[in-house]
Image 1 (cartoon, helix red, strand yellow):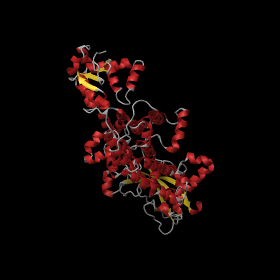
Image 2 (tube, helix red, strand yellow):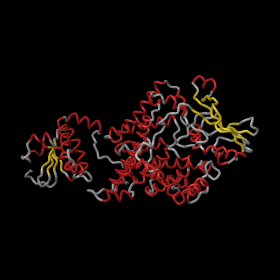
Image 3 (cartoon, one colour):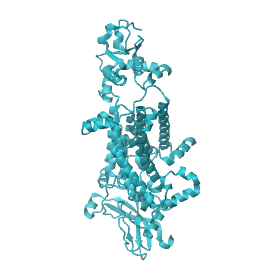
Image 4 (tube, helix red, strand yellow):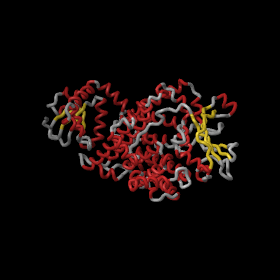
Length: 620
């Protein structure tokens, strides 16, 4: 207790201590003018009740009525003057052992100030925060709008051939069968706007609306309701797209888009659940999504037991066995095995270790973002993985704060404009509104942890209650499991389709992007996704019985469906469909440098077997 009465709470610190000055600057930014700060060198004589040596050992907090607090407790008292930070003091007072640990940590830092000053500078820099993410959010949402547009446009150009009435997997037959088997429950188990109308016109109308709304997201107009609209539209396509919309990046876009609804500036969620605290909660959930995406991909490779991942030789196969290699992939394949092993080690570091830095202090977080973006750029350069790399990079952008973007964006007027999208001010204390935000956070966090567990132990290894939770949310794709190439394919079977009018002379059907002609240049196609070409890669890994869509595809060729033939690169039977079709499996491999120079062949191939028996129109 001190005799002096104060107008405001006062924190007294050592003005000669570098780490003290750094953290006092941070606390000032949190408390504003609700607390006064002063070095003891200036005010020690005003408080003779406090021993001079205490000022050098502790920070001292004095309340207006003279109550005195020292050390860690003084720090937590300061934080009670910052909205939303009073929980630290509650932990200090209520949780057994928390106060003792806090004071021990405080004494450790106080007795090694130079070391912890250097640690603080290394991890945070001079600006400890609090850091804002208004510009980060602005950039993220615009990039998300671009990705949505690309995804809708890509599927729009293929939709009739894939799921139209004359397509490979007609939506009307698919939805009709669900309605027959499930009745009214079909609407809950398979949520899609296509229930309104099965026709080709309405199917095309869905991605057209999606593209238009995506432009509004890019422009930043009516962001909150528009994000709801594009999410519903894309969910509708995913649920009616069957095998052709079953990729992990489709699920990732839906999960990211769902969280982005609540992340939008001045969203209803912010207004009813605690203002800017709601944005922070969704920001952390988006970061946790990035963590799950990266960590699940890495740990999935480890727990799969795949020998080529275990001995670091997986990338010796990956460049030619992946679905759609780029021109650079051919050259990467030619590099020595030692380089391929080093690349696997780098990938493990980025996917297994670096994700934990997502939740680390500022500079480590920047390092994590840089490493993950670098990995995505390398993947983009060597493989056509649609918009997956763009979407992962968009999530990485949320690890950078406004001070970072403020330094790189071209011009202050743009930054000033962005800052107008300020968060709704949050109120202090715990309220029903904040409980809504906390409950949302806890539920989404729990579901995300369950999905990480699924990547580690598998679906069957999980408790039944967790399996049921995954099944309940799966139709809406709001929390998903991830993990690409957990088992590496070490050979490349490729399906070659041929047609004939007499059963003796056969003509090959070329696809637009997948391998066929040995001299055909490797494509650059991402972020566009040729979904039939991708499914042909998966079909080659199995057989036609495990890919029932493939037989439909063959019969549509036999019937000369113009919508399906548009998905191919030309038609060797332009006048009339062939009388016979067959599908054979070849094993493909990249050629070496000498063979490519002499023959011009990018691929070599060897016939392995018949994939599907010879078909004729009469077989349909």
